[in-house]
Each structure stands twice: as C-alpha cells, then as structure tokens.
Image (cartoon, rainbow, N blue to C red; front, top):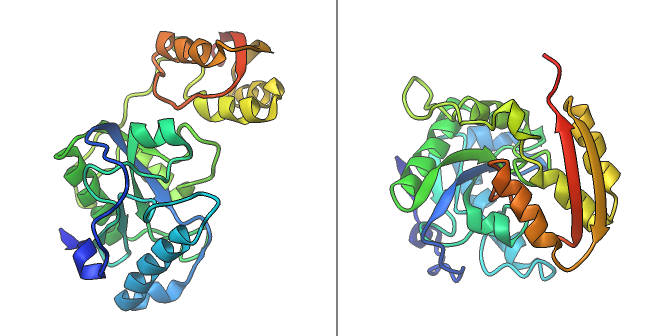
Length: 257
C-alpha cells in the first residue's frame, strides 16, 4: 500500500463526526473533467486531492467540515487519506447513506482521464481492505447504489459489480444481490427522486425500465419514513437511505426471463 496521510498533505485531524462502523464502502469518481496530465505526473494528483478538499471546504451550501471522502486513489496507485478511519463520510448523498458506508473516490472523471488503471483499482482495493479491517462491513457498492447519480461511472461500476477484485487476482467476490422475488433491487435511489419531487411516476418508470411491473399508490403523511423503511426491511433492502414524506404501497412482478 502506498498511503499518503493527512499529515503528509499538511492537513489537521479531520473534524468530521465519528463513525466507527458501517455496512461497507461505496466507490466514487470525480464526475467532471479530469485532466489526462495526471497520468504522467503524480505531483498533479497531489494537487488534485488538495484542490478537491479546498473546493469542499469552500462549499457553504453543503457545509462540509472536511474533504467529503474517506480516501482517494490515483492512477499511480497511491491511496490518499481523506477523512480516514472512523470518520463519517459526506459523499454518499444524504446522512442515512453517509452513515451506511464509507466512501473512496478514484481520481478519474466523466471526461478527460476516464479509465481507471490497474494501479488505481489496486489503491481503491487497498482502501477497502483497510476500512474493512477497521469497522467497515463487507458491502462494496457504487455511489449510484442508493442515490440517483451516474457516479462512479461505467468502468468503475463494472469493476464494483465484479466484486472489486484486486488486479492480478485476490480480493473481493461478487456482491450478493436481492433475489428476483424480493422486489425491485435497490429502490432507495428512485424513492428519493420522487419523495423530493412528489412524483411517484419517476420511480414507477425507472422500475419499468428495469423490467419490473410496478404499481404505486402514494400519499403524504407523518408516518411515511417508517413505512418506506418497513418496505426496505421486508424486501431485504434496508439501509438504502430512503427518507422523505411519501407513504406508498407497491406491488410488483419479476422481470420476464
């Protein structure tokens, strides 16, 4: 492991809230243009990490206390300490999601430098293993699992879906997925869409796009959060971070295979 600590970056101890355990780790990317120049100059990776922290601290709307990620990994195989072990991330989309998983960001983007190297994947795996030895559970997911986003992008998500194997062998097995009869996989990301917008059809349509036949009857009420949480538990999907004011009932049939 090639670890770059906060002290080496010139940062003080993280002021983020304590989070000693989670269900696992979520993988992220920058989601913007990342200069291909990083691939030829590791010093630029160090600058990139410092720039990300500076931009997060300057974001008054989000109110970050520190860089949002637990760790970051570059294409040269270095793992940078973000908030670090035992600190709650601020990268997963909302507080329930942040409490559920730590977060590791690969320094690739949606444009420019987009393809993770084996060294970057190895560094992310180093971070996952480090976190799993220090309070993280076995789940390895993408940012998009539980939140409506393209993050971590196609290449990293494909690797996550394989179980985040270490390049060259070792580390990781394919993550368990809910059985088809247990209802729509990972509905939290879609539920959040329509709890925010008040439009249940958003979730219905996205589930239909996945091949599920969904009927939803929703209404606003004070017990909605617990109703959503109960559905999550009953279908083996608890912890997806479903929050919001919408109560609903859902029936479904599995995709035709």
